[in-house]
Image (cartoon, one colour):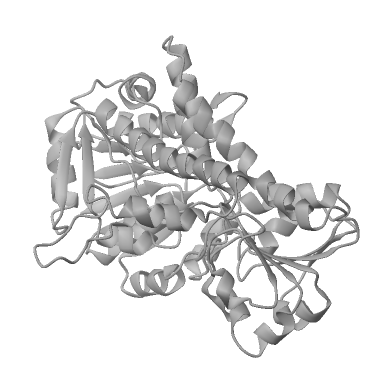
Length: 453
């Protein structure tokens, strides 16, 4: 099939490359000339595990290309997929970009005779595709739904694991407003052997918000339990959670007595909160939608409030050991909101850095991929230094705080680096280690009292 994708950000580019890998002819469109030129040279504008190699492969095979979009663009495809950003701005979801794209598509549809389906992949609140987007397309195309198609195909990509999620998904949601669009979506994903959930566009939109809200609920719930556990003392929340996970409703038991430990349990590991481009934005947009419908979204408010407070737990616990953080030399390991990506959007590291700078600590920050993005986001400050060789400065550091689970940080507990940890404070905010790995250091983490042995 010939597929046009509008937007070359995280969702658009990964989706386009994966569709091309499955045999479709994909053209990705962007309004930034520099981005298009970079992609045509097989140089992605962001880091995602496997992206560069896969992009090079599909471009070499002539199944993928990128072009500049304009009001006169001839998309020449059966499906036009929309993946532009829908940020949370001024207290609500911002549809500026998606409205502009809908207008451009409408102008294009006015001049063509063949049937084309417009499929929204951007995250939008329920009721957006079949009202806001539909009206704009109908206005500028002069056509009614049925003369063109309309669908909603939400993405469930985990940054750092995007190609695994796109090529081997656990489900594909096919939202549609007309049966011709459903037929095209079935054809598009024909080679994917997984459950296909066929629903209207509102339901498809709601599935994405419900999914993210429930996952975020687990994270905030376990973090609140961990904070309570910590204050009680002489309890490690991970011992508590091992007992919780042994409930067969969390970890089913095989007939041979072995257990299944599903990935959902990873969302019940305490830490310093969730970040990224999805959870915070989606929960805030969902909360606003609920309020507009006259619903007091107490649960969503609580999830967001707990998450907003959680990064300060690091500073609060650290000050119990070092009441005076001024001039303390602190190494921040991890700036991206999760490993295998350079995305710092809503990263916990941002808030932790700000708190520590307010305490006049001297910071050294490292990340395998996200240093440039953090330098662009945070203005240069006297006490904020970025380092590329974190191992080489360990000797002069007082505190090491691990904020992202990059696998290379596991080296800190190995010889010869472990020899440099003597009497230092290790704050493992992501449960990458255990206290026994640092017998001569002060080990801190969320959900474990500081006097625990």
